[in-house]
Length: 190
Image 1: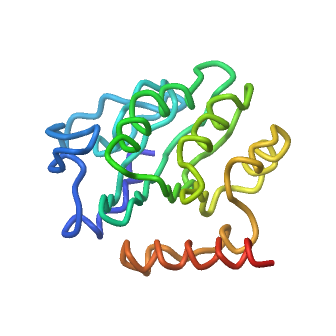
Image 2: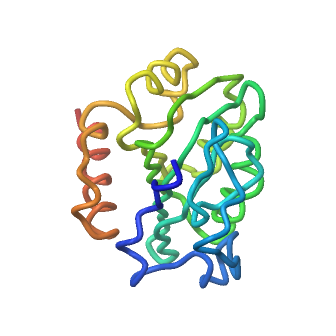
């Protein structure tokens, strides 16, 4: 687990710790001191802690003029025990939405499990992004998507289909955003 780093190829475009509008502005990182863990396995210190005991994140890119952000996750998304969505919503997403972010690309290939609770914070997030916003989940594992569907989160979050196979690491952040926006527009037109 300690070898899984947040995607770093876009650091020349954006760094959340250098962005005064980011919830992680001025956060300092160590390359050597490992303090957080998932399943008792230490994780790379570049992941951001936001209040969850098992889920960590990295804002890979934010464009306030276009109103979108790309966020990568690592760990276990556990709403049942730790109400991760509440911590995420209150401590990160609301701050980003206050700055004009209304479209979210959520990368979940490193989300190992999902444990649901109720959907109220997802519903609130969905309502907060208004009519011109959306939440797209990319490359989540099948068993995680099954649990999300079983909870009814597919009403609030866009996932599945072509969103499960986006080769996002080969793209720049704006290319990825355009790709996801195109996929979502195709869904709306169908």
